[in-house]
Image (tube, rainbow, N blue to C red):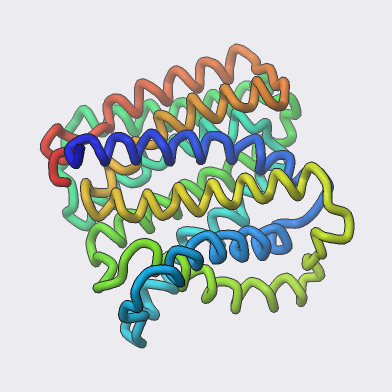
Length: 297
């Protein structure tokens, strides 16, 4: 069972993140802005992680030395990428967001090479090139997106994927310093709230979801809980198998995100978007790690 656990984890978090794509689109549909939405996402994630943390035997909590890790995870694992994703989700189709999110391993690999966590291969470089061409196909023709003026928001989503790749490699290189994944997600969420709440208040983005609770709020709950579950799985998987294998969740996120978007939001796509999807899937195949990377866990 332990041999297949990383694969099961990969599948579960891929489906959870894939579902979060259309849920995120619904969450931003009422015009709520990114910092305000991010507050409630982090609250829900903290609750999700806090329950098992409170029920299990007392363990050592974070120390001052863990502050750098928790800040890095809070910024590059949640606050920056999720804020950018919420902004992009308001302008881009949910399925397109899923395709862009699949670029995580393509950005994860160069960082892993710089930090000497992976070995260079020409085949993997080809995968990165396919990913770059896919982004060009999405932006350049002017007819791939329903609203061509939304093309710049693709860059917001791309930067979000870079953040995830950076964070995954950071955890792979430096580890969790004695903390487990539930602790890291819980305490980084609390730390993030200390930063994001005053930011939302200053920018006038705070809102009360209970004042007019409806479909967007339910969607936010589903997306947030899915993110928390998937994020904990990702941190665990990075420690067991390495950042590039863990980033292969993008295969599942892409297919699930597009499928859920078509089924739940009735989205339809141009030929350019389907071409970009095909290019990304080829790129993912080329970037995938060697077999021994999978067997580390």
